[in-house]
Length: 318
Ligand SMILES: Nc1ncnc2c1ncn2[C@@H]1O[C@H](COP(=O)(O)OP(=O)(O)OP(=O)(O)O)[C@@H](O)[C@H]1O
Ligand SMILES: [Mg+2]
Image (cartoon, rainbow, N blue to C red):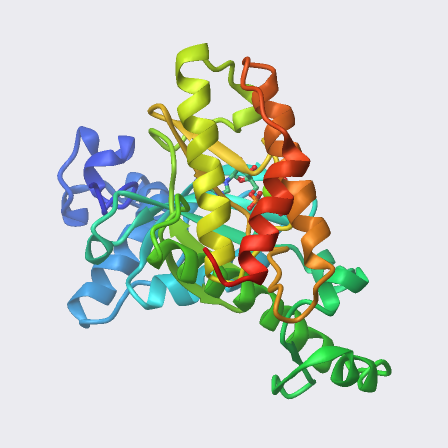
């Protein structure tokens, strides 16, 4: 991995025909050389290196992005914690979050990582759906956890700070769910860290410009469809054994790479122990999976699969 991407003088056209030593550059050329932003950045990095400190986090990819300050502040902790070294490309910008491909710090053992950054808008429109609200541990303005809707309602007249605390807790829950399921052996990206409004995880795909396609964008061969379908069902069963239902499972939240499926986006995951209505979400998840695979000749009775799984869950027989 090239962790010095766009930071070495070798990359800079201005230096390609001259010595790096600024003393050898004529006066007027020196002025333009020092005015070049890449050069300035490189000089700052050299200075920081000499002083034994980290250069400031300033990915050149973000230079012309409108939401640069927001993304910078969202990802800075990952940089400070030696998890990422740079931001390389935008993977996708969705309704609530934008996903970036970042260069991973060597300590992670990965080349690239995906950073999911929730937008400021998310902080205004927290999903208020009753099923989701009642299906997770809730937190109050101070981030304290409490069961059921009582605490949630008690803070209806909440402050900005209380609201932000709740949303951060919501994002933390997404991260912790992914961690729980990944550790149990689920086909999810390896989660690395969560900080405020951002989640860092393994990147699925090839080079930064070629992320894995969504399953809905892929035409499966008949041969591979049946085993992949079985594999997704095993995942659903495994999650349930961990007291989780995805809650938003469809071919939009499954990535396909190298013949394998990776399931993403646990933002709406729910815990059946908090709310028995979760059984309906499980049925919807399974119905959508069956619908997708039916196109490739996989026959399955979604309702029967869902009720069998739910009954086994209730009997603690998973
Ligand atoms: N780990 C990853 N590796 C590669 N690409 C990813 C990864 N995680 C997410 N993506 C890409 O980013 C997109 C958005 O991620 P995700 O589904 O988690 O967020 P979202 O809030 O649901 O966004 P949307 O509003 O688009 O549904 C995905 O559709 C996928 O293309
Ligand atoms: Mg999604």
